[in-house]
Length: 264
Image (cartoon, rainbow, N blue to C red; front, side, top):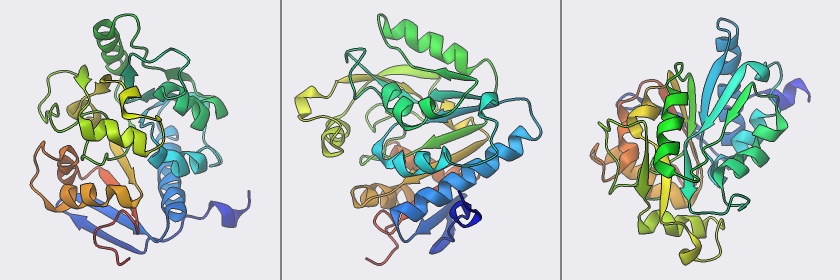
């Protein structure tokens, strides 16, 4: 990889809404490269002053470009990075290709020598799995979260009907709403709506916001309305991602398709 390849593209525009910094790029590829570069810079800086870094990753097609570029970033001691992910379906076969743990293995985890990768495994008892995963998360602070926003404004699987900005749990069982389940079909993760599981395990919103640094990566025209509501609607669980406006430790990465303020 050449020095030119690793340079981060400049945003087409940047702004702040409340406390949230927003960087908007002309293309999805540029957005992925810039967000990966920023995550890598944060990783290197943290690893220069602490013995390990603990990260949480979203599993979704929206994250693909950023994760592909991230795994190519040089001079990161991945053997000092512990990985988690933020949600998982309940009721899928252990070898189902739609499982988020498997998606992240293919996109990132299998390519790099992580110190540890903590998969969410709901079977055989989802409630016990939620409790055990929460305990692993609580063993030490979470440094970095890489997340997205759903078409219904969800963060992880905190859909509007179940989102709680003051949740007392770190990991919980949730029912997926219709919009969320349809997104999984529209993203070509499932062939039919009735194949999408009705329940999942998810990290809660307060658990995600506890991290030191958040990178929210949201490309594509399907997310444009959710981004608009997140930035300019009320801060309310009707659009869970609106809470990001209050987070000075979060940067939102958009492309021209997802940015409601970009000319198309």
